[in-house]
Image (cartoon, rainbow, N blue to C red):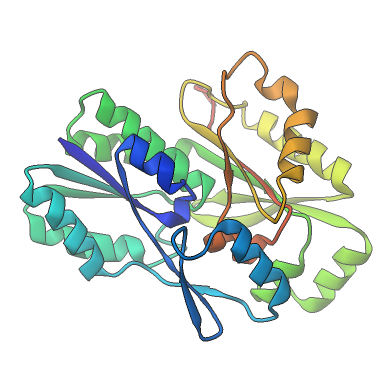
Length: 284
């Protein structure tokens, strides 16, 4: 058998991971001197409650080679092969740590760099699950993930520039001006890094910009995994997005997979963000 392993930065729920046969390794979150385990001792809602109240930027820890080695060994000793899909190597050192651990298992542990985080990482994990269920070997799954990773598109509409400012990615002056003008930025993950790809004034224009950028990619390939994530204390932003964009999904997907985005990316985008991840349509 092939065991799929990933980390909680993908924002898959523990219940779904169990149902899909995925081992979900939790990331540690530090607020000041307090440590929490993502999805175990801290839920997404509890994270945003603290994020809103706290002036300090929380930190998330990478998974160590020792932890990866323990988990790989558990399954390999039981006769399985392992495919580990990690948070993007430009976001965290977890990929390098997983590769270091895999070297001890004689070619039975394979590591795939998702080149992404949150919903982008999640669609790669789900692709790995579907390939496993088709009966592919661990090596073939990893090879296919590496082939398709460049086709993943991740676009997110942010409500505010405040949290990007807190993380030091823009100046306080730019963030202040953006707040006065009600600027809604759209970011995209490009080559494993987050890039600002557009700005709009007001939520309506921001939503139109996000939709236009999705359509510009050629649209969603509904034959492969896709996901929609949201941040904050309420899913109202998600409900509004789905209502405003019903024509993008109606008749093309029986169920729209939606997820609460946790701390790894929530730290930097803040509440009331919508994130869409998908594989671009063939030929694009």
